[in-house]
Length: 212
Image (cartoon, rainbow, N blue to C red; front, side):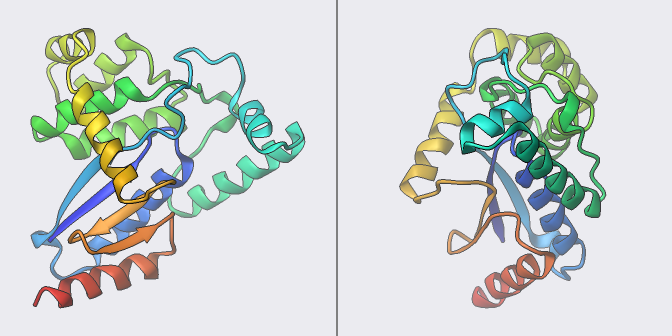
């Protein structure tokens, strides 16, 4: 059974949703017959590589909040992440454009390292406060995920896998996806947002039983 996950590495709810889906799969008796495919989605394709504003400031501007309200909102998200075993550091996170990170994830997928690369990029952004728009940082993360650093550098320098990223985003538009995380099971069942664990569990069961 194929599960497709549209997400962005700078999306706090995507990392939370990823962990909840993983927990649901751990308890799913047919988990060995499930293939998870990560698809690209940029929340802000126009985001600069080097942002002038902090994550709190960007949130405040986007939703018309005060800086205090934005910080409180991010603190609430961090608390949700902590409940899933994730450690978010919004105060020191580095906002950036994620297009290159998505290109790197497609390269990793071709090398059989999509799971490792995806997890490392999320942790780099939300926990380690690393600049995932920076070329050298991405090469180092690729190496940590078990990929060849020299080859990863060539991928980034030559703009490879850009078509794959844009293809994922085009398909997302065709499906009417406007926000992430967005999970599609067997091309038929959808879970939108970082839903509670039991929602993912129910979706897995329905999708599996429907193919029987």
